[in-house]
Image (cartoon, rainbow, N blue to C red; front, side, top):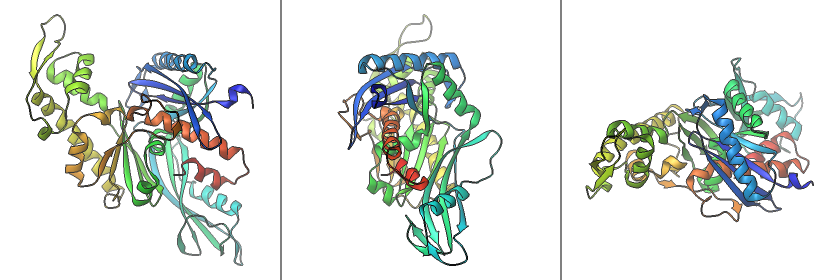
Length: 401
């Protein structure tokens, strides 16, 4: 294997930062090598609105990772997210013939292909097809039907679609930065791969990845993906609320949110005074921590209400005994976990990514969940490609818990 092919790269082009993570695949796992981070400007709600700004951000992150790893970056697994991403469950089947016979790998592939054949608008494309379960002559909840006997095989799959234009804009930006796109991956699935345990996926849980522009959502029940979606609220909205409400510059609002913000009033036991910068040449002012909470809590409630509505529409709100798992930089807001517990009456936890050998403390933080998950996806995809396997085996390997 050529030296450059020994390494895998994940690239997360976010609303507030771009991350490039480099790892070296090993037999049992993948080993962390380097992280490059650059400030990101040019996106809004997960969509690119300034191509050159994003290209510049990608270049800076890639160069930082290259310098730290001392290896050239030529290709990367790139995350896709935003309100344009939609998931739908589909079911279809194929005949095995006039007489019962054993199900073969090729039959499973044909059933999955049939189930992915949903009608799409011209500007939509399929990002992922994720098998859920199979049916052989009416027998349901079969994880792997190969070897069973029957005449008809059906497949339930979760089909993730995205705006072809939005996805192509991401690919174009990465290409212009001098990097080839090895594959595009839904960011919430990547984050889930890095944060959720097999037990949580099996019992039923919802992952909420709070980025800068949007909150991406992935629901697992019975060990498989049942729903994906996006909520048009992210960490930037909390920052903007503070900037407007306190009449302070955006950078100052971000600092105040990180250092003093809280989304649940019972946690604010002491109403401390905070000095904040004003807009323009006006003198600094003093505010109090309760005033911050009065601005942040309603926005947090709005985010959680939209998440609850999404789960209800999908019919999954009563199927989550393992509760909610939050990740992403926006999930670090103090009080958010406690507020979610009060509103959902379910277990709630803040998750950091895991799965890479030798991860530093810096990388083991919620804001890097997506980029770690992209590398786990890439490592598993490469392992699968190196051994003979049918279509469904490859699909299953993508997000095996």
